[in-house]
Length: 472
Ligand code: GLU
Image 1 (tube, rainbow, N blue to C red):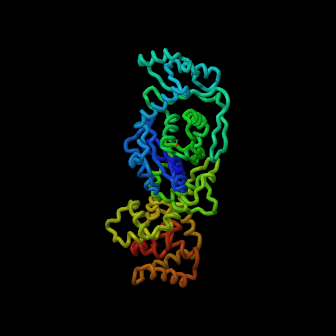
Image 2: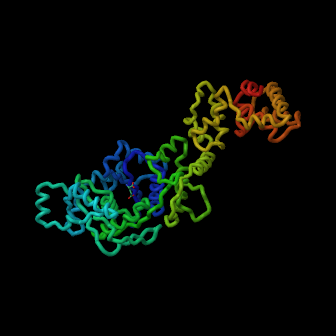
Image 3: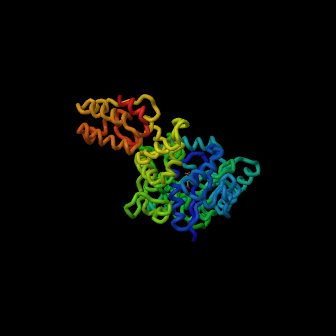
């Protein structure tokens, strides 16, 4: 059987990195087995819907080099791929379950349900629908339907025994049937619940592997009962542990947690984000950290996903991103970094700008950081920290070193990096000072900070006037 997986987001116009990681895992399972990866839009909660969300998802996955084989924008044989366009399908299957005795009409009003909830509260028990409508006579049901009494359709749960869920990561889970609620499958507005639609769609779309958040693991007992009621094969379940924010809480849009687009706009490369996210909870069998998509497809084995939640660590992501930035060709690097530079360079020669950006290639963790790094080239005043001021005052040779630089640079006939590098040697010979005491004073004086790119490049790009002025 051909492997088929699906990514099934709600169209909220937002993708946090936990969702994206799930999509990547789904894609890798499909492609490792030469199968198909589908996009299905779960918009049964119409209040969360956002215009343009589908294109946003395509765009995000496309940036990540994840191609959707079938979905709303490229329909295959199993459409529609948007749940709100499949309402008649859900209705048909819900009625089939009513017919076979695995589901029933429920006409309970909101007041009746509230009363049941209150009773459960008083007894400190979780609310379970008491099943009263499952006992209605055929005639009563007919009459209600004829009179247009609003109804939902509920799944009829077994009251005894247990249901088993088998999961690739968590193994065999047993759920006591007595705790299963006669959950709603079809709401009174004709929309299915997620709990129903996911089963119908996964079956009809011939999904072989369901990969989703661990919060659905226990729920899968109910889904299994639905598969059994229909006599359908169950998919392979791969429930993945959560990604937590650095505060230990679940990632969420509400907490403003890392969204893919935010990271992208900050200047994180999608390939680095993908690489980082895959290793967040999955460990390869070989001791290796940097993977291309092709390598991931080859290496990915979902059995190696761990059971415990992982923590999103921006520092680690920055480390990956820095590595990926360094791997770019100079041409690709310039095309990548140029849009992040927010200083006005319209009066500077292109060579100067390109060189400036290039000398920071090995120093960058993400695109926007370039502005912080090149600040000294654009701002009149540089600020020297207290520690650096203390350093400048810490050795009696420093004033002489600075003075010698000043004189030698002033006298330099040709202003170019090679000649400037020679000046450093001359200062070394003339003052007898070497190492940190030779480099740091000039670096701090001209840039304000103690680290930076190659000193001759930095001096060259600042230009003679600025350098002499700052040394003075
Ligand atoms: N719409 C569900 C979610 O975003 C999908 C869960 C699933 O993959 O089945 O959590």
